[in-house]
Length: 441
Image (cartoon, rainbow, N blue to C red; front, side, top):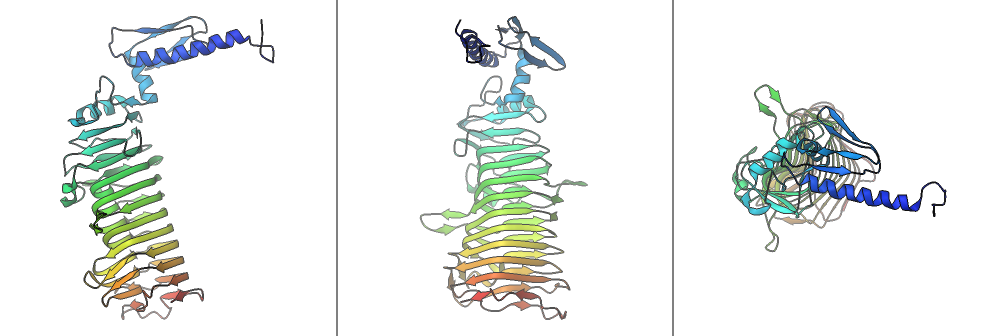
């Protein structure tokens, strides 16, 4: 008999094993589509040992022998490991954009169990109540392919939280912009509830919401909320009335990467929606933001961090920013915060006297510090006589407060009205320090 080069395994046997393995996969697929407890299929002639765990009972098929029958309980365990398809029986989500899939999705969530996986195939899933994905792994077929649409304006689109949660590859939105008139936590995109270590949110599009990613200060009286040791990455948020993201509670050790917010009302007509914040953080430590884009909207503040020690930002890009309010700011911080920013660009934005009296690049109070290396400001438009200041330090500023800037370049004549420090600040140490590399043109 002809053999492989090593002389050990006959080619014929190898081909038979391959055929048997393919047959095994086909049978598993057939079995997984059956949920009739009286109907069983057997997996025969397995090429190697095959183990199925049914609750606490292990079952094994020896090589070359008939396999044990696979029943519904076996398949539930297999599905929990590989991911429950919400469209299959007995869950039967339609994904047609018309049928209310809320109950079907809830059945799938319950069947998945703790840390179980759910798969949403391509489709538009109508919701009337937010599905609770806490401690579940949830994945779609991709942004704009799997779309979850919330039809109740006061509801979040989805809820996630607790440890090892996973949410990825889908679009999350309200059916229309009526949700924008709600007040948080109503009408948010993802309601984050006690999100713990190992959790990941990635490759998401969120739109038509009050706030895209929202963690309120508390869930119920005496029960604090938080987000910690979580990764949030490759997320686009648009059409929001409150904020791209709003994180309060007791938070630490999160990594935000490639977060992109755009708040167009109508792109063709170049009209923009209004929100208070781009991103807001309170009571958080050791937070890291990487490549943050806050664009094309009317905002009071782009990024605000309150009580945020060891807060690191690598690259903020602000574009099409229209400040609104008596005092508006790009970065605002207070109460024992320390921000380290490596790279900030501000471009194609409009500073109008009709919307704001004063705009500050940086606004701080208490004993907060901001250290910046690398600022580029260019191609912005100034309408009317408006104060554009590098720094505004409020009346509560105390000893230890400081803004240090290296490598600042301004080429459009903006932000040259000087720094404002409240007269009550009597500490001899200069509040603002720079290097010779700072230039205003």
